[in-house]
Image (cartoon, rainbow, N blue to C red; front, top):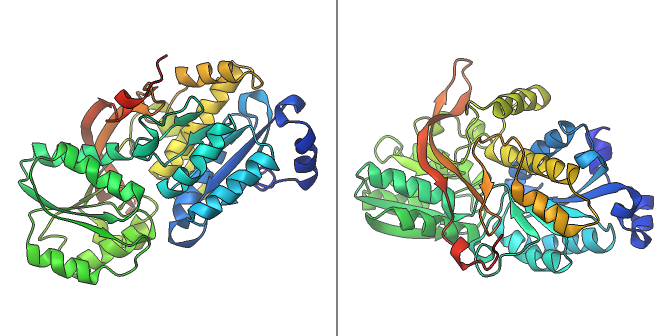
Length: 390
């Protein structure tokens, strides 16, 4: 089955599904919501490409079921995300919803999806607001809770003896979670904490203020096109060598080619790097490169895991029995690209976080090379507030 056919919604099937749920027909319908347009579009593309590779590696049939994936663009707008989620639930009658890049979109769709008792598998967004008291038996994440990657960098800088930092992020849920996570582990002085507009293209005023503050380190969270612009402008201001730049989801496979040499020597933290020596990861990276002629990002890796998690769970459970599906998902009995992986009581992963440096590899490609574990078997800070016990 081609990707185009799998990503296309068939109108006749959607009409029939109004009367007969997909599960009754021996089929699986998955709604895939992501940001496919605008400066964040590259993130949605990698999320979708990773998921579809996972479907392919499951024989094109998740859990042995005829699988249809219906793709929707949320345009990085919570209102649009809510509209497409309602369409997927009410018209397309999907069995699973997955994807979702940005946390403001996740917060818009979360309640309607879980109230419909449809499983929601986050391939990226992990806002703090759904990790604690609002946790749900119908929500799982194959990514991380938002704070965690930033906690890892805070811990790294703390261990390195950095005494102060200047921190920046876009002003939305994930940006606020990012800096909260960084400050949870970093005990040095915060010289300033700056929040900028989502999709802001020009950071010259903020960089001028930063340079005047003369911090020993800068930490930022700017995913997608925001990261391209910030890193370029930071380097153009002559700051990369003067004030070390640390980040998460700012310099990665989705942004680094556009950033070019401005990204060299920067450090980040993530749950995964392309060079992790696990058999599953090596297979995934080779297959992704062969299929798309580009390096996979963390977005692709975690979404690949979403598909493989679903495949395993639906192979050993009955799609019509939600309790059996939930029990199978909780076991997380699948070969993750990241190595160690299990779910916490709030259905967010317990996993390692790594430091990486952006370098050129033997082929001259800009890549994020693993520099070792920062946090091992790391749990998010909100799980204790979640009432679920299993």
